[in-house]
Image 1 (tube, rainbow, N blue to C red):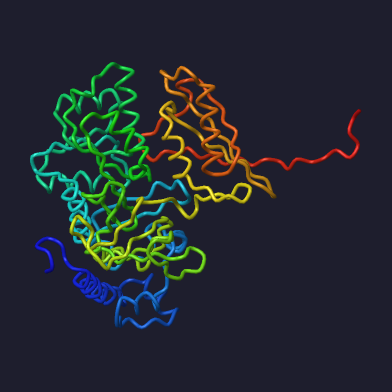
Image 2 (image 1 turned 90 degrees about the vertical axis):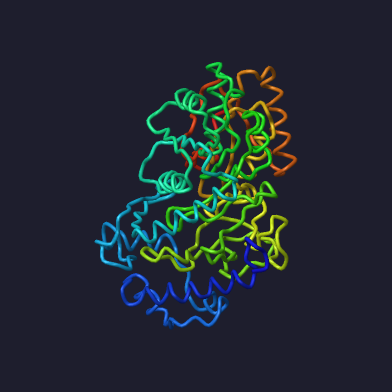
Length: 443
């Protein structure tokens, strides 16, 4: 290998091709979903190269998998082995549609645990750490993987399910947790509760906060805010999906940059509209093929995540040759809205708001009619904000400067807006009646 611990670009791509060939060979004829899908597309199962795979094999969409599970309930036909081989059940949150059910064999689960263990290694987590998991354990896959991978690493794993925020803070401090796993929003919420209940976070031993579930972990404003709220702790971003598993981890040498775990995934970036490949530096949709989740596979899965990559012709300063995504997850293809001709992504709104220290929480209202779309904001100021009107004025000016839009902003009382343990739901769509002009107005 070119580096003692990191394979070269040629070695990465050679391994990906070998794994792709093994994966596709395993799917036929046992996996009915892909046997039918690829047969209908006239695809032969030999793969000459990675480029050949990308040019001939069709994309897989979430809609296809949802429809397959609807027609063939409850688990669909995207199963490579008899049902008796499967031991794990998980499902998506369903925040953007019908939840997906996902089954794994012990072998596929072991593959995903190894990928999550790689996230821990990149974050510098070792067997001497104590990891606190600040979430309830439901059917969502990430919680269980993170916990079991921590145990596999040899770390002491502290579950925080069934606790309120204050109780979790006490458990973090009392048990000497050194690593905290949660969403970026919930890390902020824990710090808010600590301030309200006069819990001194300087007593905490947390040195690493591993976040996922939201784009905020790679936003400079969120990173700066959490660094101020959690003294001595470093933020470490990561992202994954129920359908594919743990996909990326933050670059140890460059905060705000995610590395795809390319030993486990074949990743592509495409134009969401045309499906054609996007060159490095241009935003596009991330397409993933998990190379080791054979029991419930996905070939060229359109994730809906917007990213941009860097050229792979030279190693990263951390030594890795894996695909690098500066800025992390930039947004979602289905989250972008167009207001008066301006493309707006949630991450851009969040970055503007988080850059103003007086904002505790916010809500975005999207008003739609048949002919136009409007946007407005509710903001909840922090309790120590002494000039709410000035904060609103500064925010309106920031949006005008950064997005070239005049956005109405309303300040609401402290404690009004909801707080989130899971993925934050801050964008609300409201259908508005078209404004009509009365031809005979009353004088």
